[in-house]
Length: 62
Image 1: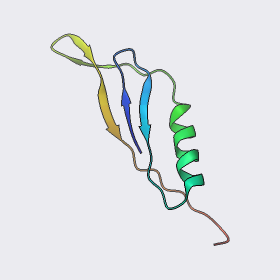
Image 2: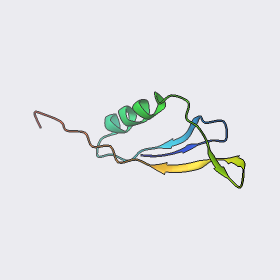
Image 3: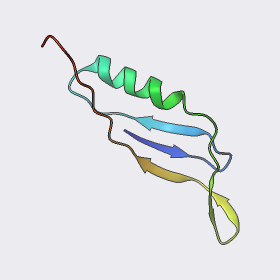
């Protein structure tokens, strides 16, 4: 997962990479459910911050 927290603290530009399209959709859904987050600051100004978050799914029956 890769996404950005914008100057307002909202999750934007969500990107995912997975072995199956269904897993990409689910990972994007989960990150989209994050609450508003305190934005980053640089020299006293609010700035957007890029994050990478590894998400591991364990699938049973495969």
